Length: 315
Image (cartoon, rainbow, N blue to C red; front, side, top):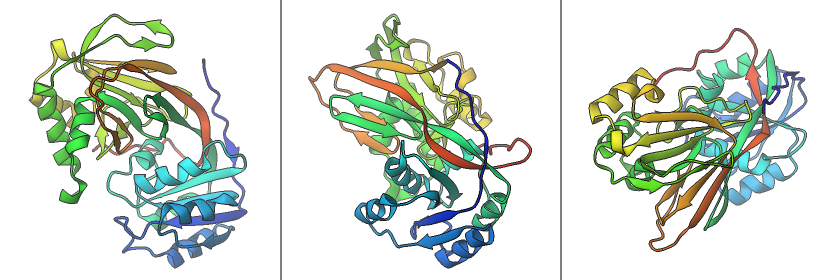
């Protein structure tokens, strides 16, 4: 199924600013600076501090118009979870984190005030989410979910040591070389696949996940599909090949990697850990079942600066 990407001219109106004081760029711009820039675009803007999830839920409960989010992917995710499926609300990103996977996928990058200036001429586009159901319940994700080597790396990755894309890439490449394969028979768009020994199963909505791991070069969060990335453990490449491919931004081209556009994936659950964006669902040894992942097409509407096709920066 092809999803039409409706492009609508944005008109200024009410705006709400969500600001993460812990984000990487928060020392450069403060809420007052951003509010002034938003109001210069013609919006009537407000900002209320959101120190915890309860504050965020309260502030967004009656939000309408455009919600500008200044922060990293975690702040964007928390905001998007509150706005998913809501009519009449547009999400405007002001990337201020370390990875900024969502902003990079949309081509929204640069200093905060420059990003806001770019919204003077902007379109509103649909943005998909992923919906995931497993033994632990239901989750939504913006970037990716999956199991295998990356989920294991993420479970051991300690952000307190510093959010380092380089360290994450090295850890993933090293783990891929030694990870014990999972023999899984997936179902893709309700069609069964043969049992395959897999080192990685990632269902991607954006091009990158976690600390800027670009596993899905051609992912498009506005096309009504997800990218299924599988690494064949029986024919895996060496750690150097994975490192080089991630650096070149052509991970999908490796012989051991399979990439497909899908709308629905069913993954056998044999107790393995899963990740949902940056969160980990811990292993449940001895438990069995099915994890179902499907696209929620157009769950959000996002603001995208108008102009020539925007180039997404490589890691």
